[in-house]
Length: 142
Image 1 (spheres, helix red, strand yellow):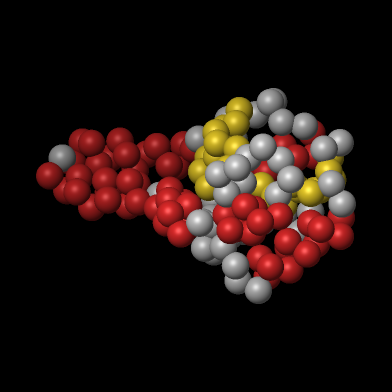
Image 2 (cartoon, rainbow, N blue to C red):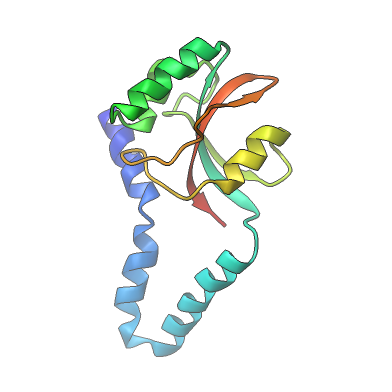
């Protein structure tokens, strides 16, 4: 789980955006294009999201998992210990397109801010779907 935690932290921080802004001082044209992209992305709705979740059939189990998150445990660690689905890699579902998720899951997921496993912003209360109860977090949007 330590490797998963590190992977999640690196993926969730958006290090490429920060470093490209700093290293592009040499190329002013490239810098201006890169700074325009995030503005356009924030104005237009995201089409896909990088999602992690914790899925439990019973509400009592998902609330226990949420308690662990509130205690400060990493999202991917709690997902590995509590989630009952096939997302084995710390709850990662990968990149999903808008329209490919069940309604309540999608509505909640696209409203979440981008966060990391070590400092997650997640759905509270859990989201109920036909699959069970989900705690959802987002690691990226595009």
